[in-house]
Length: 304
Image 1 (cartoon, rainbow, N blue to C red):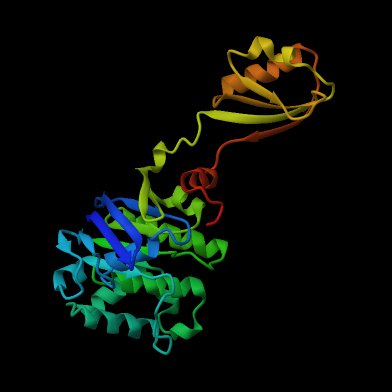
Image 2: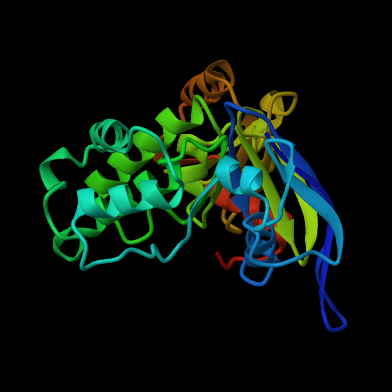
């Protein structure tokens, strides 16, 4: 379990984090979002022991964040955005070296199991410098979990990967998330939707959203951008007004925006109504509010 309690951090007079609190239980993948300059990097540094908070605290599996605490180090795995690997070492050699740092027992057995789990078998006898970026990320994940930590923090784990590599890494993260607490920092909205059980958003050092991804029904409505062959007046839509709201996109009445409940019956009623009025539909664009639009609405920015 990961627990953050009233974390506050200042850089001089600038407040980078302002009383941030949240928890993430075992078996949950927590998405961590925020625009540039929001305080994400500061929070990650505090969680991983590279920086101290001015106020508040965080715990990993019940242990306070402190790089001098062996129990805390044993409970935390971390994959930074820029994966730090010894590229002159061979894959198996590097993982064995990492296992020795953690003073693990049965090192050979542990490394063998980890290589199999992360799909590194075909590459285990290659130098890390010879690996593709996708396989380097696998090595990074392997070193992050070699000591079987309870909490895993991943910073932009799929940046720069091709589509096939992204799918492979996501599948591995999903597998890990079933048994550990995983905190995933990313700028990729689709990654949050594909992987995460819950999402938190910070902006300007404040926690501004914390909710399950399944609850992110970004809107209860769908927008239909339609164009008719012939122009119509507002009164054309009067019989549908209990069901929809409408507005014209042009002064001639050819193009309309209809807002209606997000269900197939409502949309079917609109199409049936248009047909019953002998109107001809020449264009239809259906739009729902995306996670990116939701993120922008929360943070007030279009930058990711």
